[in-house]
Amino acid sequence: CVVIMNLWLGSLLFASLLLIGSALSPEECQPLVAPVSLADPSVIYGKVNFLAGYTDHDFHGEMLKLTESSWVNITESPAGNNEIVMSQGSNINGTCLKNTQSMKIEGNTVTSSHLNMTSESHVLPSCDGCLVLAINSTAKNIKILTELFKFSFANIQDEITARSLYFLGRGSAIAESDMELFKKQASCLGFSGEPNFLHKPEKSFCKEEESISLPSSF
Image (cartoon, rainbow, N blue to C red; front, top):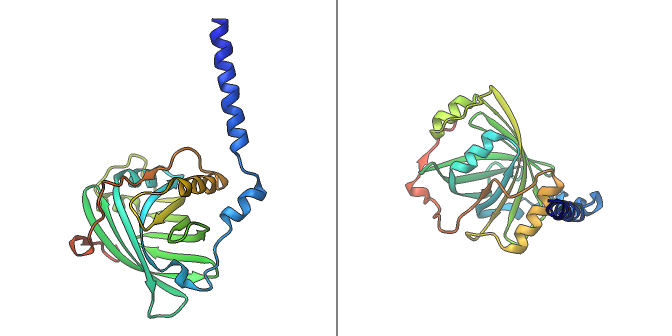
């Protein structure tokens, strides 16, 4: 028993040292989570697929569990450089849904308000053709959202706030090196473990013409 206990304690100590050794210092984190300049909005234009994501709220976690696939397409807005248009198509709970919304760029922050949800997002450094978004969001009237997306959530609140970190790319799977960087960014922002969402390459993406349009408001 003593031998087993010593082996267990040794393994625990080794695991602890690995965790300590893998933790990044504030100086190492700074370039990984410094917002990308959006002075030229075209750096985020294009169509990308949602491949991995972290969140710190159970409601968003449940939504990610129901998400089979999702893509976004960001384009220039006719309104001018401080606005962009984001189209999104998602397979949620077996149903293909789509929506389009206008978003504003204020400095290096992207703000949006859609379907009782408001958000502020920053673009973080990533690979060429990839998009990493650090998102702070607030959602109200959660019951309406659960009815819309057809799922039950026990702890329904009038308002929830959440932090999320999403990785989007052009393919159907995230490369190992990109995942390593993404996890470092997640760690720097206080997330741990495996992502709440990881796209399965065998899951296809919804076609826009086959998707049901979400309402623009409730």
